[in-house]
Length: 178
View 1 (cartoon, rainbow, N blue to C red):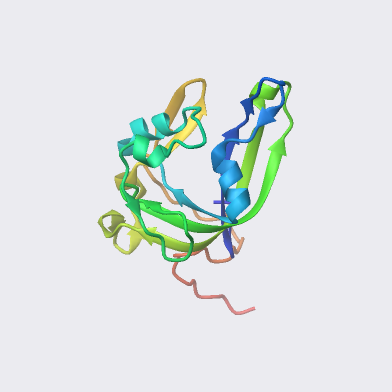
View 2: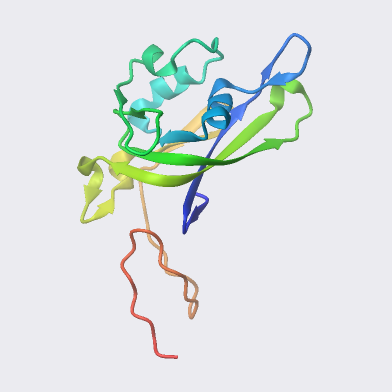
């Protein structure tokens, strides 16, 4: 999450080297830029093998969802389908692409940012009215070939005396008189 009013999310995709040495944008980046929309499907520990397989460098005509055996579920606000097995799906409007500088064509990365316009959360992963991150076990790339997932969550109040705006999903806090 990059922001919450409105909410933004991003994904990063490495460039693909071509015979002329220039990087080619991955199909995910090209598709988003051409259509103006995408779905952010939360990667989880349960989906780790499909996440890994979907990162393969494939021909543009290969459908990664079919390759990975994932279920296509129609979205409500954008054309791309959602991944049925993912517990959280965010329908997004394309905002921008940031191309990060690289030392070679093999290491170019494109960061695609989108505004979230619709959110779907599987009710199985809601506990006491809040998203249960421990049940979902979101997956994160660490570096090397290492990944991690959420297995513990804790809450921290802001520094003493600091007031922060409410975040999406948080109960409204009573304001102290001025």
